[in-house]
Image 1 (tube, one colour):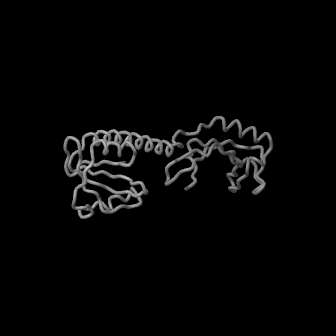
Image 2: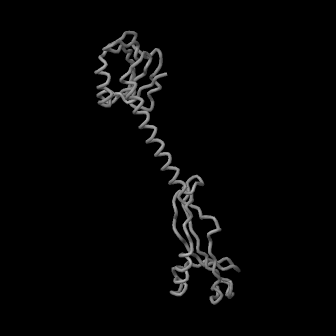
Image 3: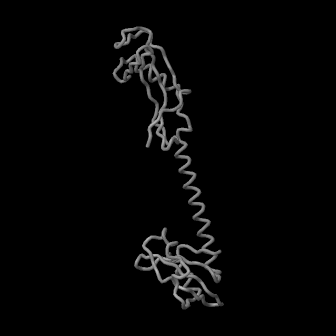
Length: 201
């Protein structure tokens, strides 16, 4: 995570002509800078870090913490900060994350609706990904369908991560003989969450 300051266009500068710089001992060189800061990840503004203020000497560059200044200076800081608005683009990263999350939720809803339709109308060639009772993931392919039953080739292999299911979905990974189940059994496996993905070419 990289911490960055916002652009200078919302930087408010106030000359403090009545104060002398303790470092270079010059007068009329101190300036109060009020601005906003944001946290950005990979240079994308993610969230605001709020309004900040600092006193800087325009002659020697010495910086002063406003929290150590007089009540008069602190009141000036408060007034100046009220004139600064936190830019909405400070929250760009959060907006992107929210958009990605919304897109993911929308896609999952659509995918679940599609799977619900596919399981009610199975076809030869459909690939089913499922999780067994021991927590292992595997696949089976439908070879043929009749009025009451489906006939499938089960995968001989299983894997412990659903995301790695493609590693075992190979043509030579399936048993050479069919097994049958009723359409009701197939739909029940889906309703119970055992079947979690259905692919149709």
